[in-house]
Length: 217
Image 1 (tube, helix red, strand yellow):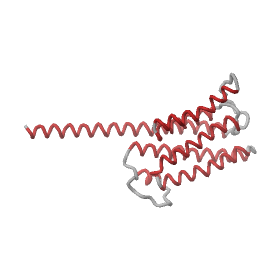
Image 2 (image 1 turned 180 degrees about the horizontal axis):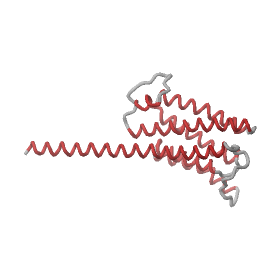
Image 3 (image 1 turned 30 degrees about the vertical axis):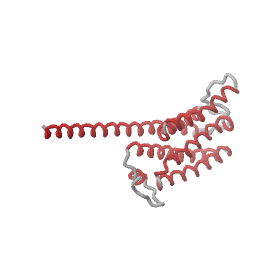
Image 4 (image 1 turned 180 degrees about the vertical axis):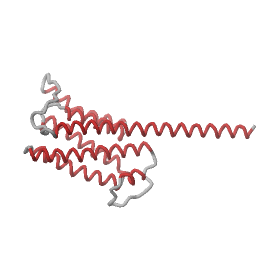
């Protein structure tokens, strides 16, 4: 990172400008995007939970909301701590997966599956192959345990049990899909930019070599 930022910086653009590498910029953008949507989702769950007296959901969402706000603040203040923030964000997502299955919904629902995909995506795109593999296994483990110990259980997409009440559940599903799509888009755009940049440098290098050879002749 090339620039220091003031503690009270809330500008995402300034945080992004501290890093010249396109791939790292994409990783910062992915973390910021997921955190931004997570803030929105947690706020929705708090409101819907209070309206429907789902107090367990309210407590979990309120705690998550505080954590997400803190992570956003640190990201905008010290984007160099990207990987530490990603670890915390992913671990919170894993906690949500485990509690969705064994505490709240008592089944495998669509939102839980979406969180598993986001954990896998974040692990590989932000942390690399080893952490991506590790976090993927940990996030899939509760799904496998549930299927094993509950017998022949079909994956359910219904809104029953202690799941977030409507319309909160449907909003969460839509926002999760948007988060997944945007994260993929940001990473692959950055990957393509890196490829184009390297191809440009290679062409310039070849031209320089050709010119040098002509001068030598």
